[in-house]
Amino acid sequence: MNKAAGYLPRLVETEIERFMKVMGAVSLEGPKACGKTWCARHLCKSEFSLVDPTGNFSNRKYAEIDPMLALEGEQPHLIDEWQDVPKIWDAVRYSIDSDGGKGKYILCGSSSVDKSSISHSGSERILPIRMHTMSLFESKESDGKVSLDGLFRGEISTKRAKEHSLKELSAMIVRGGWPGMLEADPDAVSMELHRYLLNACSIDAQKIDGRKRNVQGLMRTIRSLARNESTLANQSTIAKDTGEFYGDPLSIPTVEDYLNVLNRLFLTEDQFAFSPQFRSSLRVGKNLKRHLADPSLSVAALGLNTTSLMEDPNTLGSMFEALCERDLRIYAQYHGGSLFHYRDYKDREVDAVLEISGRGWGAFEIKLGSNQEDAAAEALLSMRDMMVRNEAKKLPEFLCVICGTGDIAYRRDDGVFVVPITSLGP
Image 1 (cartoon, helix red, strand yellow):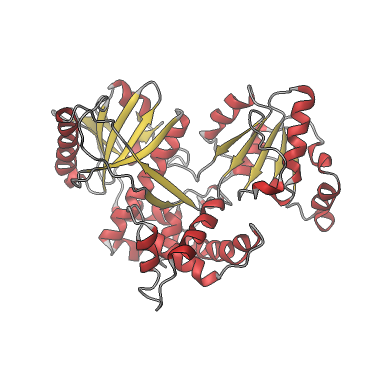
Image 2 (cartoon, rainbow, N blue to C red):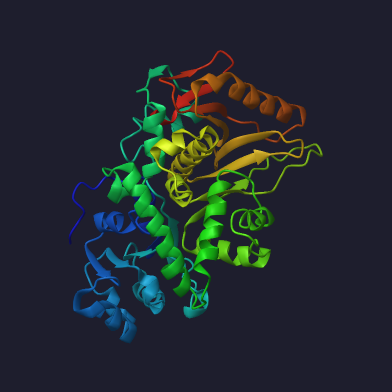
């Protein structure tokens, strides 16, 4: 079968191959254009695509008549955009049950299907795996000299990194981690991503469950998410913000519905709150941190380009944080871990907490400029000392400042690591 020329390997491949050994199928889920199909083609021997226009989309017609036809082909077999004919899920489950085979199918989907349209959850047979846009390590813009694995082991020696200017970092943010657009002009990509969002609101959001939704209302919600990128904005805050430039704000129930739709289209990422399990009575915040699926979508929603983003330091700082947390989320998933944030009721906070089962957790502060390193390290040390005082059940394995413009990865005298994002890898 055809495979994309110049395909760059993805970290999620390791997860797919691991679970294909124990499951009958995996369901690769993520936003459109993040590279699901290319990745699955790299791992499969045959393909059935529901979006193949050949014969006036004859594949879709055949699958609607008999979903088992979508399963024909040498295994592992790719079924692309399967959610367009939800009964394919039941056919895959039946095929796996019939012989107990492992690694038979990879299903790709850009939206979550209405569960009422399928007969069985697929539990223990079909494993969902989330795929994201590309990290800087995957796009070859991080040399990966400092690994997440090394941070947990505390084995980081001083390493020289390639220094990047604010203009280069801004361009990385504006262009995003979309595999089909890595070589394109970042500002042209941003204009294309604005159309991408409009299509998501006017087409994908309208057919996800048959309900018609206001396109401009959806776009207002996306712009509000972009303005509140990397913050703890709740639904009430987002609803109020939608009226700032457009008159009457959207109602909270409407915003709740729109956020659910965007989540089902895999266009949002929620970073949940971390609880260090204090033995004392110190209360920890539970609000989640909201992101769009890639910081480039936030830039596009706000109508910014490389130059205008650089001229807005506050927004650039928020988008850089989102870029780093996108990469940390991908690296965490590679190790079977999860990404959180921390904030307690005394407003002490940490940008990112990465936890891996069996290995503990590490804390990150994210700063665009290396001149902010001292303040970031002090915040991390203060948080750790507070946790000691409040008898946290488990303390961080490491503390790390991620910076944008620095050119050296090293360990400070106080034990805090400093790592440029373009040297961080899995």
